Picture: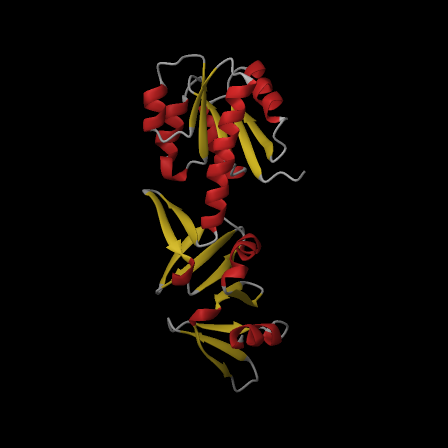
Length: 237
């Protein structure tokens, strides 16, 4: 079975990390992509592996689990399941918007309950994710509905989203964004540009025989010769 969601396990005890891996083996739709021993490693890994879920120990050397969330902000965290040997942090954990709170050692039945909640939450997120793009900012996040996007351009491993004359940079390659939005009225104009078809006001030819997509925002996006037929067909559909 193909894994649908990625997991990061953060605990300073190797035995605890191994225990979570063993419990996760019964849920092949979840794949472990990273393990961390402390909060500093977690903060670094959140940017590199971008997990859907983090099983987060509260008491870790240096930066503890609560401090990880404070520094990252709840809006930019994946789904969080706290792991701890103590039950006195439960109220604080839910104030930090954790999905669940597991006290070690965790039984298989209790873990299964958590996994059902995770699958339900992530499934709902997947259905709504295609309708919007969340752009992280230093102060939190900006939610950009797809229907407000004019076009998206490639910026190496990033993408720049243009909406209403403003732009937002997101750490996601254009090819990955295309997979998310192409069923919602977006098409490639050229190798480095995705255009929302509903925002195309006019297709015009240049004196040199090139094709330009003129958007309602006023932006003019060249359409490459290779993609011309498919793009024009999509606009007319």
